[in-house]
Length: 93
Image 1 (tube, rainbow, N blue to C red):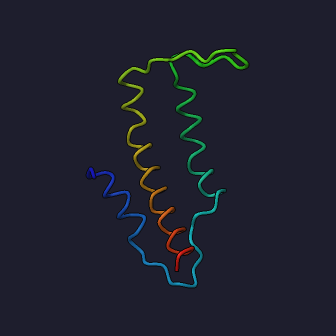
Image 2: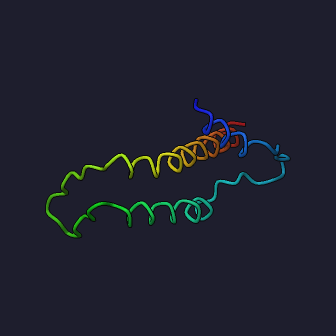
């Protein structure tokens, strides 16, 4: 695990939750966090896909595009793993 992944996980798990506190995995919270990232990523595509196209063309992405969103993707995946672990712990306890 890379340093920024460890940092994201540390921030998410730094404060222990009391058992009575609900697990923060609500879809609306996740959507509010992730939607602006997705909008930004879509708006920065070199060429936007056509709606209702019969075939989706493969669109190569340059290194600048990939580098711009790599940290955001890693952070979101780290958050998702912690949220999934909380759901599983809750469901299996």
